[in-house]
Image (cartoon, rainbow, N blue to C red; front, side, top):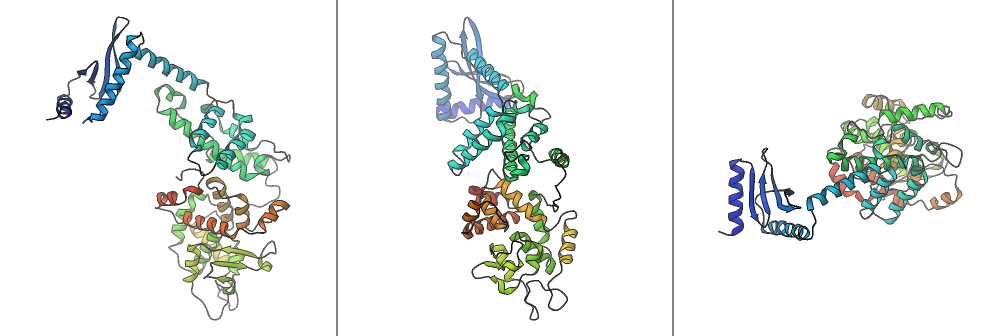
Length: 439
């Protein structure tokens, strides 16, 4: 029997016996069992005339020859230090104290910069890391950079989101997509440092009862709503009730169980991020299923300009299976001859499945999902929504339409909507387009 086999047999016998103690493996290296039954490797040595024992780590049996060799080398390194007057246990304690002191003085800016460095190599491009650094430097560090991570509050996050923009308006009003990304980035940074430190006994107390102040929970939503009202409400703009994008996959799973025309019209509207009227007035002549393109003429668009929609595979499948009626040109004909399905039919379907939310609100759901979780550019997102762009430079860029990039975006959206129960598969397939791991 090989020596390693004999060693494992003997050590397992000690574990089965359950008697606390230490068993030498030679040159100070030993196997020890505590009164609770936990097994560890340890080094016994003498320093400054005192006998000491330093734990080297948990012992998992059977131990391999490679692991045993690693432990023997580690013990030998410590013995070399002891020969020149060093005490490995005292050194370890000094290093741990230094780590505690460093962590005690860490600021949000410190942990944020560390977070970027840790993730830089795994991000899709250097540009993404640069975007993080630029937005944090410009908008976050001046507000909360000097605050310790565990002391950041919901009010601090609100101060970041509502700080004055160069236009004179609050940041969240002037550049809402950037504000949304800032909130998401602050949430990810704080969650990372919490997960890293909470498992360490020296840091656990300061994180007890902690909840992430940057997470979009009711507390932050209420603060944002109160701040908006203090600024004069919505400035006369009506916002449709939007379903949180995190709830959308489960909603779509329920919607797909319905097969009537109003449910199918609602599903197509959500898949294509169109306005209700654009879907209900759609005709078969506008749809090219072979090319996967739906072309809405300018007279039916809010901006009075033709809008081409690259159809996702889910949208194409829906249209392929949609019944055609001889006496109607519409995709979704109404009961009255020559008329399309009424908006009330779609509204009733939406109310029945998700009370409190609107069909039009899904355009905001789509936009929030892009801003919070994906790397798709804002220009592509705005073009997918057929929004009018006032900036001349951006408008010139958009004249090219970037149809291929919008096709990727809408396919990504469709697969997100249909990912209920397949979240891991979705996250793996689209990881290059995701800001952070999908949860």
